[in-house]
Length: 382
Figure 1 (cartoon, rainbow, N blue to C red):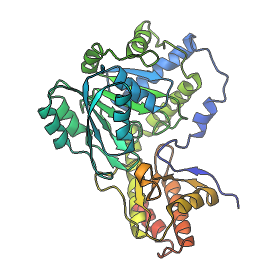
Figure 2: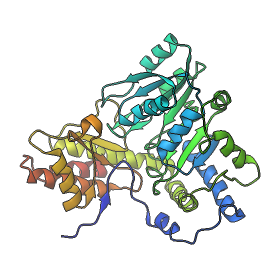
Figure 3: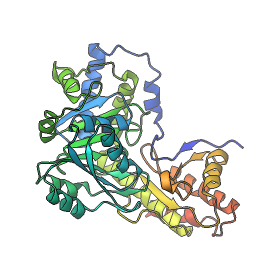
Figure 4: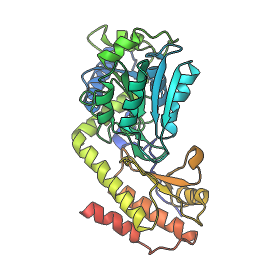
């Protein structure tokens, strides 16, 4: 039977039709005034979503490229950083730092929990040599969110800079770069920004630039200095190397859609979808995995006893056409994750819940058919 395909992962996400259409247009040259005008407008639009007046750079890379840039441009070999991790992507900060010989104070909470601002403060007080604190806004491997505002207030009182992986969260959940005193914020294209993978965006505060001037790690393609020099050399923005032209054009359309809806409305839409997904899963008798502050971009759910998580995931994807996300690392087969992010609405969540009900029923899991869908509907109608 033919089912409509739905992408309900925390990235990549569905791409709106008008955004898709931009990629079908003829490619224009990246050094023309026409393209540079679009790039200039995109940078301005991104700053509004980041809620920053600081410098902002765009790299042709996945979000991890932006993360790597935040290591190589801020650190030198032998420097010490603090990584506060609550999952697989938080751990990536330490992995990148290790590759460049940067010493890491790795603070990792039990997966499912949120990092403690008090513990970050304690570690900063104990070691004045820490140059930077690296955290994750929305940890998609577990569904936990970090209190960036509280952590920002703590780090701002020290010489260290605060670096935030907001790859999955920006454009979907609240993130106030300047107001929350986040010195560097990294974002990715294929999440809340609703375009295909391939763009990494990085905002940089004056405090971060001061530290960047001391950095001696090797850098070329991800050099902030080179990128910023091209960005501000003339009236229209430019890049030192060939940019992802089609993705920039798609980003321009995506930003138009976000601003047309209104950022506060976008945040509220994600909050309601998340609430509906959580209520639906609990109505089915399933346990949510996140025990900390849950993120509104993804709902992580424990696979119940007697159910094969791998089969559950494959049936929902291959039979019912809805791609969810499985568990990563030590959570493989133990949880599944419902992405409600970017170009997603009420009906996508309801369809995902209905598919989960069917797949659970096929494995003999006992529940009242329709109870999950009903719980989700009640949230949307409230």
